Length: 417
RNA sequence: GGAGGGGUGGCAGAGCGGUCAAAUGCAACGGACUGUAAAUCCGUCGACUUUCGUCUACGAUGGUUCGAAUCCAUCCCCCUCCA
Image (cartoon, rainbow, N blue to C red; front, side, top):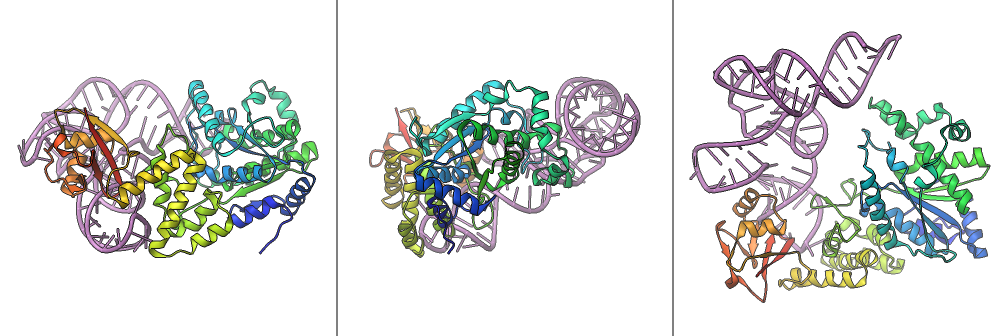
């Protein structure tokens, strides 16, 4: 096993966060030196506010930053207010739609909330700081920018960057606007270097090109070595990106997804993913991870519960995680309905089954509910519903609840009032 | 500015006057098997009512026709090449 001098890189390697580094030895030396002298190294993670919450796919670099902080270093979280106005061409075939000012402002707030779940912000020497690149880009002078920064970039080189090259190869259009994206991100890095002494950028593997853009600019323009460090893109055993549940993204912010659903996402993870997820999505010590990931067959469910609980705890807090877990145990193991299940309300006069499932949001239309009934996919208090015209009334209350289920995994409560 | 190509359901992508609610693939969902896993098999996959049926939908608006996603006109948007 490779051994690094710095605690941070050792952890990254051991937990499966390590994908690629611009200069492994140099970065290791730098970090080890900081750690030894008790001076925090400064590293940043950038994210464009193209949505109003991050989802599990974004957690990987966030967790890296979390460990970075735990190792005594100082994380910066950059919100790409400016870069979101451009659109990162990496991995995209099309120009992104422009976002309105209101949407951007709303998204920035959402992003900040997401960040705060994973890092400790404040004024202390290794507390995290939030910055927005719109602050330095909004008043930038185009001519100066071109002369200062543009001279450091060779178009020949830019054309070889993957984000650009793949577009050209697939004969997809790329606007000049997007072409400039890497200059902005490169410039960000250097601004943070000058303002905060930031020498490291941490991100997902898809950001490699943009990171290199920054390290090269740092060397050319400021004669400073910057480090880039990326995580692998986390995929499931089928090779698909993780982070979708029931066709929807698994959001970090609670207003986008209840803790119970968040918990269930991890509870339902594939066997093959358990070890990987324990390393990446939880803070559990490695001895514990190693113990859990070797569990087989039914026992692996215990590992999944711990994974789900620990992951939910980080993102939603311990109380929420406990409530979610309790509800899951009640619902799935004891067969009675837990309190944290999604609920819908209906009239005391009685509610048609089709409407009840609509109200819970389990089905998008009555037609869909009918189909599911034909397929024996809907249940009322664990009994398969066969009559689509059935009216649910108070006589259906069992154990104090009316439990509605779709398939085996989606459960909800109906409250009559 | 000139020439050409294109805009179809969550995505990809057929259809090119009726038999089109629209092939096929992916995704998604339900069932069987299981462990709230994976793989596999079966089924479903616009809306309303389910029995017939009705309505909305193939960039937008008009038109031709008994009948249009399919033809025509105008407009909007996208792409490629040339200048």
